[in-house]
Length: 89
Image (tube, rainbow, N blue to C red):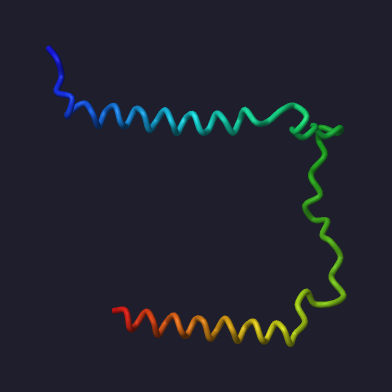
């Protein structure tokens, strides 16, 4: 007549986890208000300007000497980690 509580515990645990998972999704959707949503385009057949690219930069984001220094530091860190990984085995 009554179930063994040890056997039904995994079932109740799974139901509880599913409830938490579904509850987390709904809380994210509730954060959107009509003011935060994007307005529909005025022209229904207009495409987004995906091919309009920004102009090319005149100067590099990172100067070449700093870029070389960063690359050398990253290569040295990679080599140290490779040696440490071999020693750990």
